[in-house]
Length: 126
Image (cartoon, rainbow, N blue to C red; front, side, top):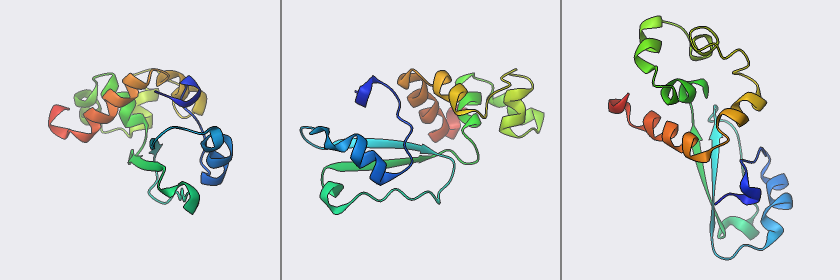
């Protein structure tokens, strides 16, 4: 289940609290954050620490790798010697792969995103 039935774009913990956590959820909720940096900070206030689990999914080096895995093109990518964003722009012909709008549309179906994350987490399946 998704809040507002969509993927949310909110990097600030305090903004997330203000916009979404004051809705009054029953029970504990889990927030999955997809990031390309380990340095991003997302510190919830003490009032919400026991109500929210935060799971950070780091897509190092880039979120484009999830797209490559989802397209089942990992072997071709490895052979190409390109960076993930170059491979998406070149052989996959995804010109706007760096734009938040493209990524949001591409992963609009959360199941597609979750499947790509699972492929990323299991290197033997690549």
